[in-house]
Image (cartoon, rainbow, N blue to C red; front, top):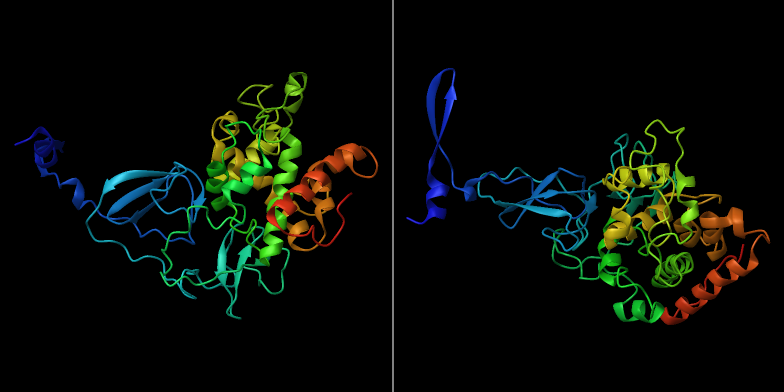
Length: 366
C-alpha cells in the first residue's frame, strides 16, 4: 500500500474521558460538501462554497468569480462527496441570470443583485435595509442581465464581460508599469458588478473610459504605483481615529490607480472588500487585483469633495466633469487648476475614441 493511500485510510486515536477511542477516518473525498457556489452570492473571507466536487474557502470579498478562479480569492479545500446542503433558493432565473427575489426588510449590501416584482433586475449601490428598488433610486440601480442558456452557474467570459478589450487597454496605456495588468483589472470587476455594466453599451464604455482616464491622470499613464512625493507620507495618518495607524504613521500614502491614501480610507476600503488593508496597506502596491479593487471601491462608493460617486455621475448623465469633482475637485475644479482638469478631459476624449463612443451628456469639465 502506498504511503498516500495508507495516510488516507489509517484510523485516528483520541483520548475521550480517559478512554482510548478509535475513530475511522473517512477518505478526503467523503468530506461533506458546502453549499453550492452561486454566481450572485457575496462571499466574504472565511466563507465556503462547493463546486464540481470540491470545497473552496474565500480569502476575501468576492462575487461572480467561479471557483477556483484566477485572482487567488478561492482556496481549494479538497474534494467533497458527502451530502450537499441545498443551495439558496433562486428565483428569477433567466438563462445566465440567476438572482434572488427582492425581499422587503431584508438587509442588502453594495453589490447585491435582486429580481424585483416588476420582473427586472437591480443592483444595490449602497447598503440598505430592504428599500424598494423602484422608489429608492439612491440605493438601487437597474442591472442589465441577459440570459445565456446555461443556468445561473454558467461562468462569465474570461474578461468578465468587460467593455474594454486587452488590445484597447494596451493602446490606452502603451507605457504602463507591468504591475498594472489587464487581468488584474478584470479580476477586480467582481467586487463591483455594476461598474461599466449599467445602462446601454455606449454608457458602459463611457464609464470605463472615465474611470481609466482618471486612473491615467493619477498614475502618469498607469506608470506610478505609489505616490512619488515621499515627504507627504507621514501626513496621511489621522490619529483621531480609534484604530490609529497600526502599520506605522507613514504607511498610508497614495497607492494604486486612484492613489488610495489616509488610514481611514484604507480601513473603509478594506472593510468593504473583506481585506485587512489597515494592517496590510502594502497589498495595494503588491497585488494588481487588490490595487484595482481599491480604485473601484472609491469610484463606486465614495463622493469625496463632490456631490455623488463617480459611478453615479456617469450612469446618471452628470458627465465626466463630476467624476473629476468627486476625485480631486477641491484642488482642481472651479478654476483652481485648469491644467490638471484638462489633462483628465483629454485622456477621457482619447479613451472614448479608442472605444468608439462619444463623450456623453453632461459637463466634460468641472
